[in-house]
Image 1 (cartoon, rainbow, N blue to C red):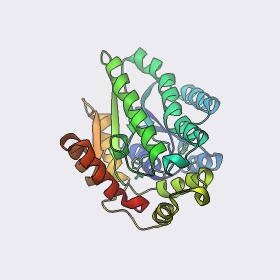
Image 2: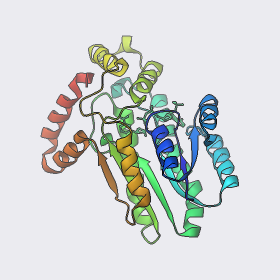
Image 3: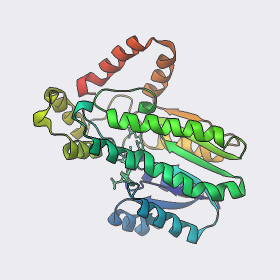
Image 4: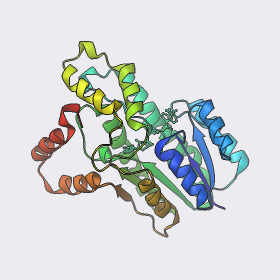
Length: 277
Ligand SMILES: NC(=O)c1ccc[n+]([C@@H]2O[C@H](COP(=O)([O-])OP(=O)(O)OC[C@H]3O[C@@H](n4cnc5c(N)ncnc54)[C@H](OP(=O)(O)O)[C@@H]3O)[C@@H](O)[C@H]2O)c1
């Protein structure tokens, strides 16, 4: 039975992956940031551990607990993250730092703790939940954009460095997926952005309406669409480097290669709807 460690299993894609991969016969170590979510996962029969990506201590404790259960981790799935939204001029150094602690530095630290054992066995799959926003930018999503661009940069480098091994790295690049992502982004917005002092109040009003709405964005897919790609990335002899999920991701992946940067900017600003999309 192959073992997999997944981060951010309290909701959305992470929870769907944990359930789906367990159904497929993998041994799933499901982790979550909050104790109550770890308890819920245990209640559902998962081997569950607390893992807060913003804390080095928490990451180390989780890895220690997992390696007490298995010496043989086949895969690490980097999923836990949140979207810090807000115009960049309203984003403090602290807000950017927190975004990177969770979305980038935590993922890097976790990779480095798992790699030695994978190298020893010369086998493993590391899967990263990037985004369409890992290769195109959208207004009012700067910190999140930057964090996903950073992940893509790290993965593209690590893949070269591990080319002589049988450890394969995949970037999953979803567009909109059903999850708690938007409501969690709203929480990060209220934590860090003082709307009353911003030049972008009207944009924020549109953005908040979108983040709090239950209405799905156009072309949104259920989390199972990501699961399908992850199943391939885990099981195929040659995992793909990129898995583009949803129509917007596929479209932007083509446009960014074909169009001049200024035209692309116009399209991306239009697609962002001034914060409303
Ligand atoms: N939904 C989309 O449209 C979309 C599109 C492209 C990429 N993605 C990527 O998909 C991944 C999953 O997001 P989702 O859509 O499933 O959103 P979600 O429902 O908000 O789930 C995010 C998960 O990350 C966890 N998380 C946040 N901060 C954490 C921390 N410090 N340590 C550990 N876990 C933490 C959350 O835990 P808490 O419940 O404790 O906050 C939650 O379990 C993310 O990497 C996201 O960037 C999502």
